[in-house]
Image (cartoon, rainbow, N blue to C red; front, side, top):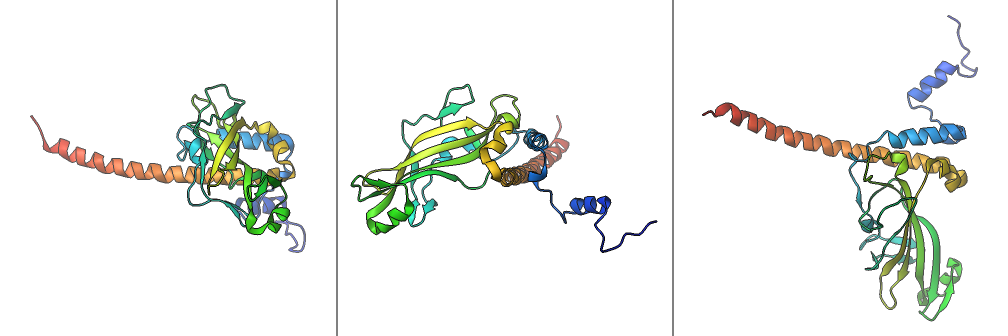
Amino acid sequence: MASVDSNSESTLARQLLDFALGEKRISLGDLSSDEFDKLLRQTLNGVDLRELRGFVPLKDFLTWREEGVSHGRYNIGHLEPATDLVPRLVGYEEQPSLEIHVLQVMRGMYTLTRSFKRDESGEETDDIKVAETWRRTGYLNKAGFEIVVLRRPRNHSYGDENLATVAFTCEKVIHEDRFRVTEVVVERLPVELFRERYGAKYPEAATDLIWELRDACSRTHRQLLSQAESFGTRLEKLERLAGAIGF
């Protein structure tokens, strides 16, 4: 068998072994466009969304009481949808509702827009550095965010058809320490547009998505095991009872 100098480059077999052992990782950015799209589509379609746990109504993503989002010293700590809010759907043909069930599959939220006011006087800016000079007389007036979700399918559609973004705008309720969601847009995110959507950061965004999907599957697996164990206990009791009775 031919030996390989330890100072020479690794053989292809050694490189493949390193990847298999997890000692090296593949950068999604090194894949061709077609390879990337195919991998992302196969990953999304490889999960049965009807069995996946963790979906909640869209309105739950737009409501929080304690934890919030901070912009410097400005915080959105209390958020709720406007009572008459109806989301706008893009790429989906169905009745829009805040009861649409979604599962967040990328960590955190992306801030799209923000604006600040001073003493509720009408003076506004979208520059946080200017707002900071107002000190306590300034406050966050409006902000727009985006999250990436999977929608729970209402039919037998695959995961790639249910990948979507949820963009929403919230505004401060005047003279009150709370915010209200005033606009929501749920837009389908086709796999072939993923790279364009996230530009140079698309490998990072896709990696985050895959990791979050793995975590969702892990949580589902634990819940199913727990349910199976509980059901098994009930089955054992029924089997003992069935074997102990007659007519």
